[in-house]
Structures are given as C-alpha cells and as structure tokens.
Length: 310
Image (tube, rainbow, N blue to C red):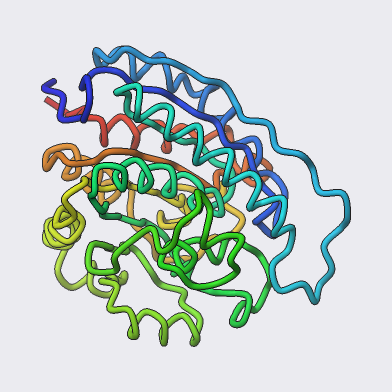
C-alpha cells in the first residue's frame, strides 16, 4: 500500500474522545473501547503504519442534570471537552502524525475540527471537510428541537450557534462553506434547510446518491473538500450507514449508505489523497449487536487509510 497521509506519512495516533453528553441516548461513551476491542490499532499496524494509541481523554461529568427545556444541554461541559480535544489534535498534527479520533457523540467534532483548522490557520491555510451523517447537524440554540448538542457541531464550525462552541480554540468560523461537503443526509430540520441554503454548503442527500451513484457523489464531494489549500478533515457518524449494517446508533434512520457504498466512499478518499484527519463517532454499544457497528467502524477506517481488496 502506498501511503497518502500527510506529515511522515506512516505515523498514526489514535485518540479516544468518549464524550457522550451531547447525545440523547446513553452508550456512545464506550465507542472508543468497542473499536479497540475490534482490534483497531493492531489492524492499522498490519497495513504498515506506526501506530500510537494515546488512550482516552477524561471529561468531567456534569454536575447537574439537564432539563427538558434546555436549548443546549451540558453546553459548558461539552465546550470544555472540545477545548481539550482540540489541544490534543493540535499536538498530534504538530508531531507530524495523522490523527484518528474515536467518539463519543458528534459534538466532539467542534473540538477535533477546531484542532485541525487551528494548525492549518498557523500556516495561513483553510481546511476542507467531508461530513458523513444522516442529519445535517446544523441546528443552533435558537433552532434546536431537542437541545442535544450533537445536532449542532457543523453549524458551530461554520460560525453559527452558542459562542462556547463556535469559538473553541479561540476563533470562528473554522470552515469556509465552499470547501464543505455533507454526504448521506435524509433527516433535516426545517431551520437547518434555511441555514444550508443561506451558506451554500454542498449536501449530497440519499436521493442524489440513489440517482447518481456513490462513485460520482464521492468524486464531487472530495473535489469540493480538496479546494481548500490545507487538506480536508473526514468525519463519519455511523448513523449515515443503513441501520441494517450499523444498528449501534442512537439516531438510526432507515435508508442509509449500504455496506459497500460506505466502503467505496472511504476507498475513494484514500485513493484521492488530501485527508489530514479522520474520526468515527456515535457508536452506541448499548444498542449494538455483538459489536457489529464497531467492527464496521474499524473496517471503514482501514479503507480510508488505504486498505484495498487486491
């Protein structure tokens, strides 16, 4: 396998971010452990990479229980956790290593992407993004229907929402919408649609994937993200996948990416090059069957790193 990773090219750091305060269902905090049980680090090493497992970050538990009327449940705890994640991702990148972040719920992306964007910013560059998700994750405290922060990180990275989230790592926005591609959406709130249209973020919905095929969609999505001079971050929420293949999610929506579509997407990313960080989030062990979703998450990471059939 020929490496297309940045920096030294063969050095990978795995960082567990078992933050689950942003989700509405308990269980995502054990996602990193589930992927390690599925032999993530050993299997990455088998591809010829030097792997450093940094273990899991520790997040202080909330002191008070969130209330149903809260517009951003556990916001201060999540923001503090995202600052920690951003700082650790910065260290990995500055060491010339490739970060693989294991969630936790998708609120962690407000930290991981912030870390990547801040290092690129030091070089005067902006980064791109490929975001796989059944949902837009573009709610704010003004538009949220649930108050769950894992529905807000993409909006925050684009500069919309609570300042505690938008200004993780000390600046906003983290992303230029021209360089952002969202793949797999099939459950979008009305207010999110308005923000998507306002910003012009390129969304590849499941209908477009059905009509055009995954190959064409990924070629265009990667093309959007690669317009950024600083490379692009890839984040995969397992609810982008069809629940028949990935049942271990607290936010399943029928009609998602198939097993092969998901692998093709990651294979295309590896083939194209330019990825500078990768994360997999929202694996809920309480809802999984025989660690099936975690095993798939590991397989998709391997495909993104260049594992091929032949």
